[in-house]
Amino acid sequence: MNHADRNSAGLSWDGRPYYSLNAWLKQQFGTKVYKLALDAGMSCPNRDGTIGYGGCIFCSQGGSGDFAASSRPDAAASQIAAAKLLVAEKIPDEGPFIAYFQSFTNTYAPVSRLEALFTEALMQPEIAALSIATRPDCLEPEKIQLLSRLNTVKPVWTELGLQTIHPQTAAFIRRGYPLSCFENTAKRLKEAGLAVIVHLILGLPGESKEQMLQSVDYLARFTPAIDGIKLQLLHVLKGTDLARLYEEHPFALFTMDEYADFVITCLEHLPPSMVIHRLTGDGPKKLLIAPAWSADKKRVLNTITRRLKERGTWQGRLFS
Image (tube, rainbow, N blue to C red):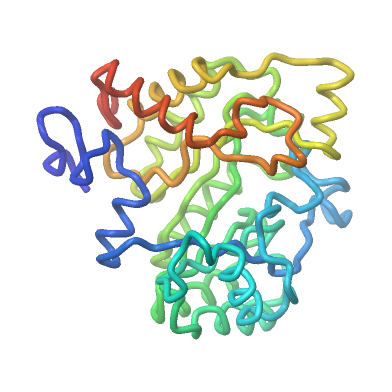
């Protein structure tokens, strides 16, 4: 997508003032595509002692995959069937679907296991693409080669949890790898022909809005190595180290109005060609401690849409 794809009001072809994932999927597949959250049954080097224990301070016991189907982690076909049942009331059974391996680090296993699992998922007729959430320090050359081969069968996306560019914050949240690792991996993925989607968390303790925007600007300048972005509101979830910190030493969180306005500023700084995969996020209500307003995801997205119109702005307006 380029500037020519927008009209004078800054609207993309689907009528939104940003390049939504929904618009991109319809461009690619000609129809609406749905995600199925799956669990590959893997751990994380930040949990098993390779790098550290306990994971990142915000990570729940489900490893950010609390909505994933839990049927037989090693069997993709049975998980896909189970995931379809979970969403049967809202989503057509025939798909097409994206097989989204979400929980923990989904390339943290031998190549042979990854090949069997991901190939089985891609071979399901209703699966149109594969999306793999992982860490940049768990993508050795042979794993990237595997994903590149699979990408010739059906599209394969890699999702990297960067969260922040600031070393002090990265150490505080126990991310466990330097920014240079992310840079090198993102470039190698792009050279292998793979789509790269990056996660940022907005509202991490100790970060100012200026620092958060610096992370956004960094990714904006990193194009074309980055295809998409997930802007994730910080959630405080039960059972996490972040929750203990919040209870012992409460820190400031975004209000809904503050968050909506700041997300719009982030959109203004991102290139028009970058697909927006997420604008907020919704933690499981049974685990969510704060902010309580984030549980109503529809209301949050409607607030962002309304503010975009009120401000008369759009994605890329301040990007150069």
